[in-house]
Amino acid sequence: MKKKYTIGLDYGTLSGRGILADCENGEVIASAVKEYDHGVMDAELCAGRERLPAGWALEHPADYIAVLDSVVPALLRESGVDPREIIGIGIDFTACTILPVDENGVPLCETEAFRNRRNAYVKLWKHHGAQRYADRINRYLETRGLADSPRFGGKVSPELMLPKVLEMLDEDPEIYEAADAILEAGDWLTRVLTGDHTRSCSMAGYKAWWNDREGYPEEEFFTGIDRRLADFTGKKLAGRVTGVGEKAGTLSAEWAARLGLCAGTVVAPTIIDSHAGVPGSGVCTKEQLMLVLGTSSVMVGLSETPCSGSGILGGVKDAVVPGYYALESGLASVGDLFEWFVGRFVPPCLVTEAEEKGQNIHTLLSEKAARIRPGSSGLLALDWWNGNKTPFVDGELKGALIGLSLRTRPEEIYRALIESTAYGTRRILELYEENGLSVREIICSGGISLKNPLLMQIYADVLGKPLKVAASEQAAALGSAIYAALSAGAGKGGYDCYAEAVRNMSRVRDIVYEPDRDSHARYTEIYAVYKAYSEIMGSSSRGIMRRLSELQTE
View 1 (tube, helix red, strand yellow):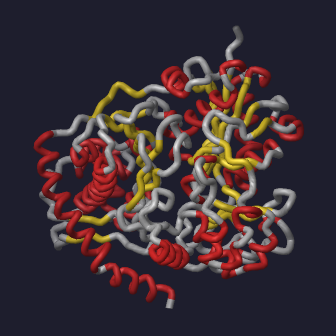
View 2 (cartoon, one colour):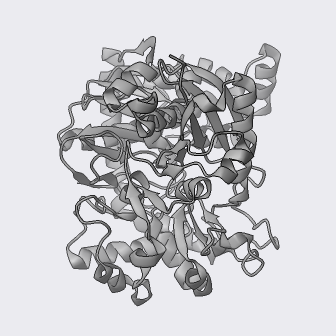
View 3 (cartoon, helix red, strand yellow):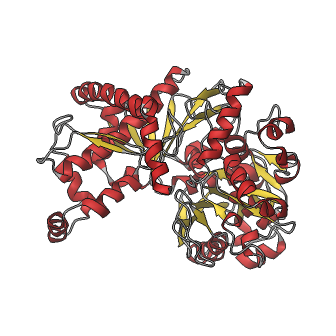
């Protein structure tokens, strides 16, 4: 029998990458990457050079098409695989990353009328300009008695769909009216490839409050927030919602010819990029938990019952793993935080030392930080450099570092920043366990899990759990390839069973980071201080941080 293959495309914040995977064993036959030409627009708009307000993060949809045009042909050239043996394409994408399109699916930012208008562009997942609209929605939920509903996750973040849409509606209602649909960027790509108007269960459920029992919230819910939202779900969110194992559609003849594939190739529903890491990491059971460590972090655990509260989303069943609700939360800044410190505050003498040793500056700092005993520096940091997702769900909360003295060294700050992200992760894990999860092991993926052993050991010590590492360096892309094999089905050479697909196509590395008992005990003491300080800065003193944010823009 001839081998069968699937393509997994992983769209991140700065680039899109793809793999071609063997359906029999998950072996990656070829890989390719394409950086976005426009990058993230957070200072000015590419068209017209308009200055963007604080908190804005936009992208250009042309960059996503460029990834298709570059990556897919590269996979075919590198692998030499016959396109007839490729049975499916899976896509994962950052979310909530949205764009308005016209009746032909053309992004409004690519039309002459709207190319100079910021609300016509893609609003990236980390766009925080809509915080005031998230606040407005949260007040509305409280008046309706819905703040604790599993559907809304306890508190609405500016990173979800509706705050970004309300921002568009208020700032530039002409764009809202002109939009035939408002799509997740991942759903837009499957629509481009197939011509079918489908939406992902993953994105609709976790970012726009859809569930398989009731669909979207009723129209009256949206008009209670703003009367202009009467057609929001009926028109702007129209489209069949598809889940794991279903098809978003099949590749059109036009795009098959353009990419060098076969018309009719199955296209799986888009999955949130972090969710794709679940199968890509080998997570199958509720005793396992997935942790993606990259620019930000995402933690996904499996539950038999829905969960909500404190920024945790978990009200959608079968969106990630069949038979389970997937509980999701994470930190808004991890790798970004370390890069910020290294790029802005490392003294020249350390840069010179790293160069003389032929080391990356992170490697040098990690070596020095590894010699520091937990708690010995007297430093404590809050990990909110890009806002807080859990437990305060506030994009305007800021990071903090206390305990500094004239004797403080750069490596001590570096270690304190790593520890702060571990404490933030432990807070999420505690909330998961309070909601019934019994986690035995954590499987990590993302670049940091492969590059920074110090961070991995600190996380194991802080969390008190063994940490494993996904074998694939492209866990999200591999997960998308696995979902593509499920959408294609066993009849075409894929799979009908999620667990079977994961067992065959993904695995973990031999290395295990076991928690050190003494370090865990010490970190538990420090974590109690972290929780107390975060409560002060996130609750009773939140007005201080809010006022600082207001002064920034006055």
